[in-house]
Image (tube, rainbow, N blue to C red):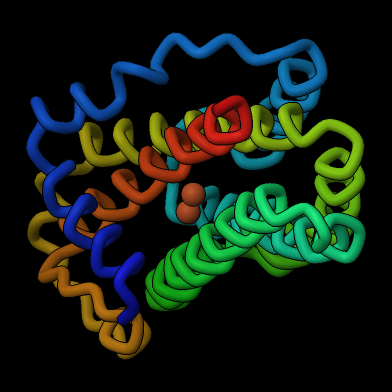
Length: 231
Ligand SMILES: [Fe+2]
Ligand SMILES: [Fe+2]
């Protein structure tokens, strides 16, 4: 595990404390996104609600996590493309390299979410081929190119759209923990992928708590990327 990942894992643990979490969330809780992100974010959340329902569920999380990886991969490819044009500008090259490093780390994190949740869904037999595999797969293809193009023309809108997506994910995991907490505490998690990733959780409660915290970190980081450019 590299230094950035170790720092992320340490923060994930700290955010289990409700006071720490509220303090960490507060500076970006009321962030107002621009019109492009607002429209696309509304479309994204509304279509997710229509296809997978309003209430959080294992199946909905599985589908959401297939999609959640995509913006980070798009950002990585977009920053790589931009570096082809801006390698002569050292300040810009540093910014782009930092975004690229974060996006690679976030891709691995979201991949861990989708792999572990998919194993749980397989055990519970709670997903269908069309709704939970085919639709997210097709959507992911178009989403990748939409985010890539959006990042190239309006980096701010691309980051703000991710802020909205991660805000939604954060609330859905929080609601899931509140609704099914007791049952989740009694369900152990055995996952070779979690061992490979380097995260230790004993129960599904601890797993979903840690994923909720990942999404909050991704939410804040999306806006911090915008602020870094302004400095
Ligand atoms: Fe996720
Ligand atoms: Fe996320």
